[in-house]
Length: 538
Image 1: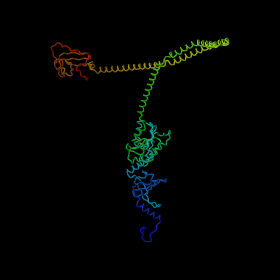
Image 2: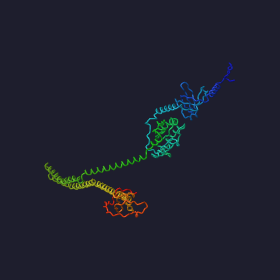
Image 3: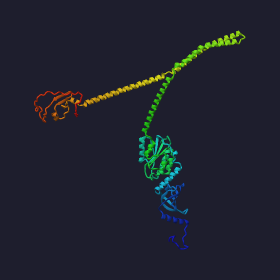
Image 4: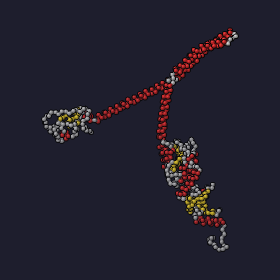
């Protein structure tokens, strides 16, 4: 008898709590062994054990759910509060708290709207943290030595990037192979970005100067790995400038907002990474030419300025003439000035009424001798000073001379003469070359002209009016014939219209004809004048 069907009063079986809980557990798990439930994720917790505890709710009810550690690591969609999902699992009870819960084995967003809602929520969260700010974006290097590419090594994306880099400016490329879709995409891309940043500059494997994260186009689900928070945060934490090139131009992912530059396609990312080598070479050549022109112009301007200044400077002799004359004038006045000074002193002493004239005369004589001695000593000193001044002025006049300018002018004249000589030689060579070509053309004209054909034994036949005859009938109908040979013309006069039968004997058909006076020969054309109506012999 089933224990649940015993209705006898007083004989109802007694169950322990564990027995009743186990019976309920068996009934619930037997009836709901495999269910699919759609709802909105409520509270979510991620304890250190690795399990995930969450609530699945709608507008009226809430079901507790649990995702065990092994299943949580395989889920493609990370549980987030507010995300509408469809979960698959089994319903069970938890005897420790007398509650039932849903053991979730699979989880997927409930349609495109749920994915977009979750993406918008992540975007708002990252924007609130300032990861999208333009101030934190790093400038790209102008010409990186090493470029790191995080992408799939087997797709067409890496071939497009390498081809574009080879066309524009070949650089060293390091490839970090990753899966570009699926549940392993996000962690592998994040590890690739972090791995490039962890490289030591100058090590055995060089650290990239620029990182490109690239993938081809696809649906929102295919590109979802680049919308994961772990990828966005890895791109934001990158110390190396990063270019995102995920999908086509219309595709937008979270990494595009966080990266330093977004490229619409992987090929465009390669174009952003390096400049065009040919354009750089042309720019360098242009700058070199501008520098040369500027230097040449500066040298010419300063040379012209120096020549203008040299014309404004006075001659060295003019600079020394005044001081020389003033020195000579002072040296001539010095003895008389000394004697006048001595005389004035004598007069002054005599006027003061000296008490001892003899002593005064002795002192005056001594003073005169001293002045004369000073005068004798001063004269050589003045002569030496004058000599030194003259030598200094001569040295300065040598420095102020126009010899450097003359040497510069002579050198420029020599350069001009050499240039003129080179131009003359080039003109003579060009003239000889043109003469040779003209002679060859004249010889070709002589060879292809009809005169050369006449010299080989051919004859041109004209009628009396100068028209060229090309058939026997035309010759028979002509009033007169003129034969043109290579050395001149021959007039045959009026010919009878007697055609010769084909294959007959021309001599037999001839009949004597009365002689007529020869007609007046027409004007003989010049040797090189072509006949009127001349046709082509070829």
